[in-house]
Image 1 (cartoon, rainbow, N blue to C red):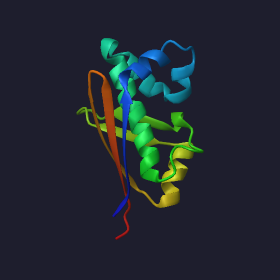
Image 2: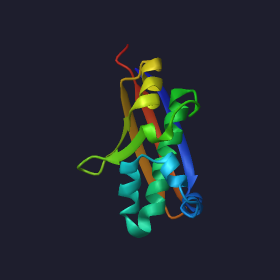
Image 3: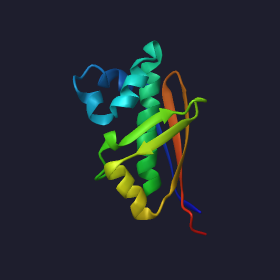
Image 4: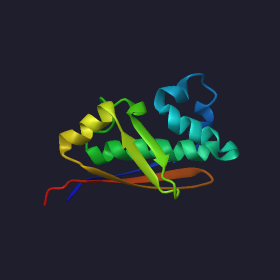
Length: 126
């Protein structure tokens, strides 16, 4: 059963500005996702924007926003085949458990100026 759906869009220019502020990216991104995104060279800002949109979409799917969730507890990464996934720990895991969600589905897309993420939360309940 679907427990929640969230969608978010982030302008890539926002990430360009954030990279100019020391420590800001480290505050919002898990070290693994930050390393992965920055390794993409010219595509780093697109990757960061998509990952941040995924965090916001997760908050919307939870129905609570991101209040009380440490953003570094949400790790957006790619499987071996490139499919994006969200790994949650700590505060993010507690929020998922609170609503009974057992699976997180993620879709990302980006082009030039914008990145969009969609999250669907699923439970085992009927």
